[in-house]
Image 1 (cartoon, rainbow, N blue to C red):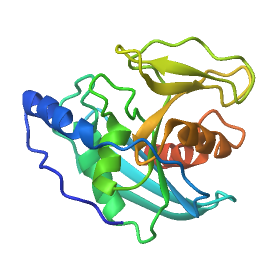
Image 2: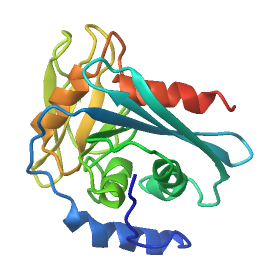
Image 3: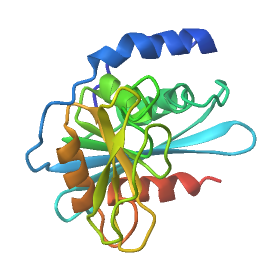
Image 4: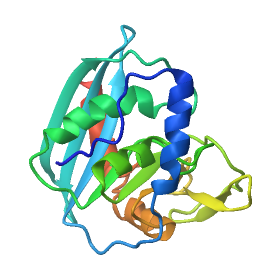
Length: 221
């Protein structure tokens, strides 16, 4: 998979904030998406020694059978700072993406997209580097106001940012189970993001691409 070179990673916290502010305006969120042929899921796990395992899993659609799995181990030096998760996870994740031989049409990330204080969470940052339609599928709420959606699978509600704009959706992927927080990563709109997340949920709370990437990332630890 091709990876663009937008900036370096040897930065301090203030420089990281500035990079986010400078890149946020490049995110595109006005496109739908026809049926993808291949969907990638990305996730990273850490141990107590600041070692990490980044995993990229590529699945064919609609069967969602695994086509390819890439795992890359590495040391992570950037500290954990709320809102700067991408500076911990993206460098190693991009190394895994560079080893993917296939060309995904859509990428799903276990993290936030534009539902982020500076509108550029992990999924959006990765989307810019990959230049592919990317969706953030987070298991927890980061910012914005929302009402709980209905309890039935497929029910949704909006996440509203501080300026009154819609920055994501709360999506009930299984009846009676905690929802996901879905937001645009890059090159896709919110309605398409919600649609494809629901299409890829096959009996579990999270979509298969990120679920399988998460499981694979835990094997090392």
